[in-house]
Amino acid sequence: MHLNLIVDQTNNSYFFPKEKNIGVNINFDKTWPYIVPLRLHEYFIHHGHTVHLYDLKNFPRDSFFPIGLGFFDFSIDYFDLLPEKIIEHISQNRLKILFYYHEGDNPFIIKTRLDTLTTKHNLNENCYVFISGNTGASKIANFLYFTDFELWYYQRNLNLPPLQIHQNPRDKDFTILNRLHKPWRAMAMTAFKYNGILNNSYWSYCNQGELDSDTAIEIESVPGWREQTQKFLNDAPYFCDTLTDDQRNSHSHVIDKYHTNSYCQIVMETHFDIQQSGAFISEKTFKPIKHGQMFFIAGPAGSLQVLRDLGYKTFDFVLDNSYDTIDDATERWQALLASIWFAKLDLPKLFKLCIDDIKHNQQLFLAKKNQRLNKLVMDIYEHC
Image 1 (tube, rainbow, N blue to C red):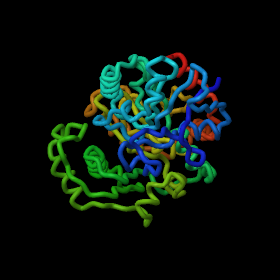
Image 2: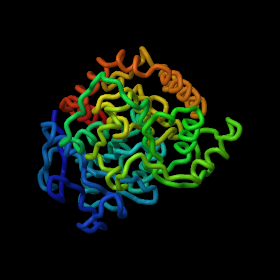
Image 3: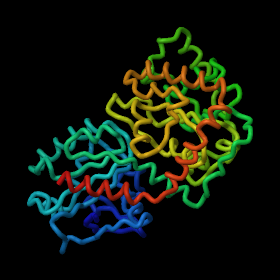
């Protein structure tokens, strides 16, 4: 099944809308209004999925005008940015807008904003489809969920072959990497430190930062946690490599030992809780999958279920993954910490028990994603 897209401005293999108030030389997600090239189109090309491109002079009725979002800004009237001709076609039900947003912001709030804008412009409330990286989108009219970062990391790490999975003894228990400061991450790393999780691990915390009230996890749930976390931050940053920050942020850069010389990765996801709106997984989760490790996910409830739904194995027969079902962030954290501590007692044995599932995950990640894209296109048209 193919997708019909209307394109009026291109930049190499990318394309994006030529809004009436935006210059051609956009700095993409760094500059207002944070419109970016459509990542989805790149996926179509690489995985051999058919997409038909049209201009405004000649297009079929079941077509979409795509808008890639690097950041959803609630102060922006996205419909007001569009050329008048586009708005005319939308108002006459000749085409719809396809918003593509790879991030995991609360989609329920985004839905409220977009519906306010459609009312303002006298447009049908069904004039758009919004693709989100938050699983909660699947519960909202006009919204769809898509695991963008599975394909994004696949593309950006394409030139690096997967690391070989071996069963030789490994020197380290865990790999736990943090590039950017977030209060809940600082709390988690502090707890790992005082529970002995960091003693024999590759770990980093590459920024200093403030310990504010937005911690997701209730910091007063453990006496002294606030003071210990503040001390951890005062002594930051902590590095386990000599890379630059740009190298650490590069999806095409891999340090082999983080995957081949530790048994398990504790993935410190982008969010630990998104107002209980849904789950969001980024490239951080797909790194140990591609390069052959067991993993825990410090992230929103339902993160492991996202992977299961995609066909990945989450080692449920040897790890206590019940934490993934707990909505309350503090209770989920307590269950996660207990599960990690228990696994630490015999990681070499657990790794050997999981070796077939680790290999399965790597092979699934490396497979073409045409079926994923085909399902997405079918879901888009079901919302029309």
